[in-house]
Image: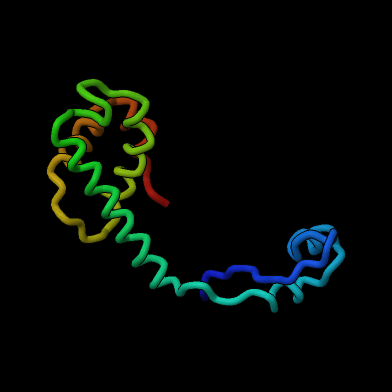
Length: 123
């Protein structure tokens, strides 16, 4: 199945085809027929994987000079990135070596609140 993008023509004042379906003014098949494949799942995943690795490499380089994202102490900035790191380190994928990121992740894993709220089974 491909990721879809809607390219429907809009009549003035009628809104998008999806909005018309939601209001019960257009048959669902109208919306389905006006959608075209954008990228295959494989292409999309490869593209996202490359972007993800580039961002994690930037974080790894950033962490070379500090223990946490903004400096020597744990802050709010570590929380969302820590959630992303947990998912990434717990997926069964091949990862390039990122020693600074790995050391930071180990420091996060040593924190009880991180263990209790973030380190939950992936579903």
